Length: 333
Image (cartoon, rainbow, N blue to C red; front, side, top):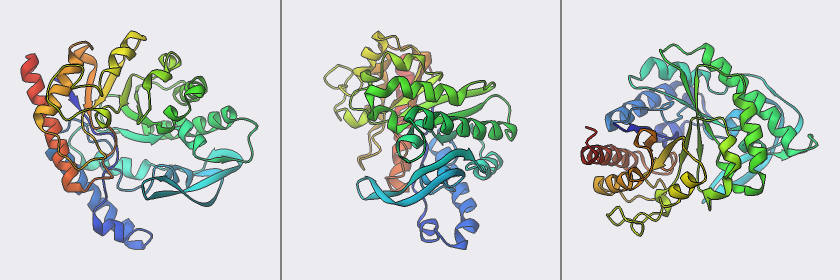
């Protein structure tokens, strides 16, 4: 059976968006969390993450708000019409308080399915900040890594379920500087150094060419890479190379030595088109022709916060139904 997971974010309900910046936000966020957990569980996922990240507004600002050594200068554009407050590092990075603990405790109380915690990675925090203090990007990234590791250790102390704590370290910036992959890997590995009883995965999305991350990324201490493929794929049915051109690169990664779990993005999160279960099936079957079936994880390309909650639910349902179709073909069900 294939393991079906989400990646992280989900669009917040309108009532929570309207309440942002007001006292009502803190009174309504747990309601939104419960509704989102229910949505994900009803979709049939095996892992509902942190419940769509209802408590945090943005993946950069949220952790930065809990760190010392940074000041905000203004907003910059991330993509489309979305902006975030960009900070400058003006002193030594130190962790002041937890950015994830409150939501982490609440989702453990609410969720029936397995959970994981998506955490913004240190390389991305470093890359998305101005540096007015550290002599190098590496030294800045390593201090971000130590702060993120402290966060993980605190979450682990508050883990109330059986089995290892699952942590997904999100590193969207990793693919934007292919000449710096060895630096990225060194920073990432500092983050997870000395951790035990923690299952580490990493999400990297929208690389122009994942092959440029190799061979350095083979030294990255992670058990799973969750990657994006559907955004560059066709909508045609079939398990041939031309139909599945978005997934062909996995063959090259395998040839370069990749043999870890791969979370294959079978749902495009930047389109309102609802992929049919048959399309999801064929995307999975194509990868299963050459990659170890036991190491294929099923997920969307990225978080679904850019879609309406209705579209997101339909996409997740199609992902689950398509996975079941693939399992029947492969004799796994």
